[in-house]
Amino acid sequence: MSSAHHYDYLIIGQGLAGSLLAWRLAQRRQRILVVDDGHATASSMVAAGLINPLAGMRFNHSPHVHQWLQTLEQTYGELAGLAGQPFLKRLDMVRLFRSAEQIRFYERQKDRGDTHDLLGQRLDADDFPQPVHAPWGGFEQYRTGWVRLPRLLAFMADWLRERNMLRNEKLSYEDLELQAGQLSWKEITADQVIFCDGYRSMHNPWFRWLPFAPDQGEILTLKRCGDAPLPDRIVNGATWLLPVDEERYRLGATHYHDRQDNRATEEGKQKLLAGMEALLRHPDALALEKNEAGVRPATADRQPFIGTHPELPRLHMFNGFGAHGSLTIPWYAQRMADWLLQAKPLPDNADIRRLAVKANH
Ligand SMILES: Cc1cc2nc3c(=O)[nH]c(=O)nc-3n(C[C@H](O)[C@H](O)[C@H](O)COP(=O)(O)OP(=O)(O)OC[C@H]3O[C@@H](n4cnc5c(N)ncnc54)[C@H](O)[C@@H]3O)c2cc1C
Image 1: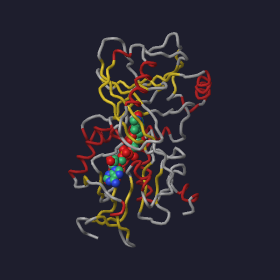
Image 2: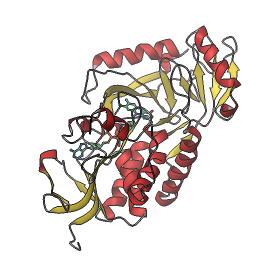
Image 3: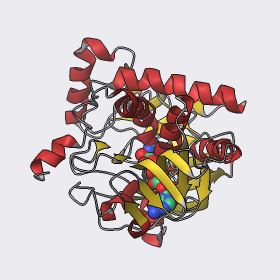
Image 4: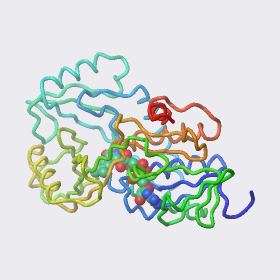
């Protein structure tokens, strides 16, 4: 098919998932069109972009973690070279224990051979190196940092637009027509469609059987307003604080499983400010600049939803990256491109086939 309006892939959503997958497919000479509604509900535009390979109360890590870290450095580095500006900022993290049990979890992880590059030394409560309250002490974490996501998305939007690969519009599922030979949407035809539309895919009529578990979160941006000492690394306890630059910090984040909108609330703000009071030795040195909210595309089993519809082979999903997209999406985008173009099997933990079997597809 040689029409100017025909594409190999129609990608719905230009958050981090749609952006990186589109870029990988375009690099491999696929004709793509990305459709996005101006980031109306992009959690990527709200997220702090933290990279934390040992997330969770037990500091466990995925067997893929070293592949994630290697691929993200390569991917964000390649994009930085293309854009002439950095997107990934490496910054060590200080983790705060919240109980004696967590100290045991740390000791257990420390004994493992595969965490020496991630897990640093234990930090005593009496001699804590950051100006925070740390009654249980904590430990140093390495290979952490954060990604400037809005800047990356803006660059990717320009990159796509310059190549006529981006359309700023909302796609309604009912306007997408599936015929035997191809798909059509308005005047556009495509061989395949990939949904990278974040939590809104929970309403996707072809993928109703995927158990999305959207997780709304609020986050604050704070401005320095005094000379009192403040952390110079990422501090992560019940609340986390990220130094963005000399002046600005981000503080997060809440989790609400019963909300699906991007409205920041007074309740969320007060909860986060109380967390800041409990965390910092000098909370008065920071003033609120803005509060924002977004919905994480989280899933019931906390694993991504990626792969192909079991009965409709032109429909694909690349989604479900929950609270850790900055860490995981670069690697999964490569796996997804390898699956689509070379039929290389997807990782079992992420492949939606695990759920298709349960849903009798
Ligand atoms: C408060 C908060 C803090 C977070 N902090 C972190 C963090 O520190 N580190 C981290 O890794 N992750 C964090 N996350 C999670 C992170 O946002 C996600 O993992 C990741 O950004 C998801 O990217 P995505 O592209 O899948 O989805 P999204 O970013 O949500 O992108 C989906 C895009 O599709 C568009 N879209 C949807 N439906 C349609 C349609 N029908 N037509 C056209 N366009 C459509 C949306 O407007 C949006 O632009 C946080 C999230 C929140 C809410």
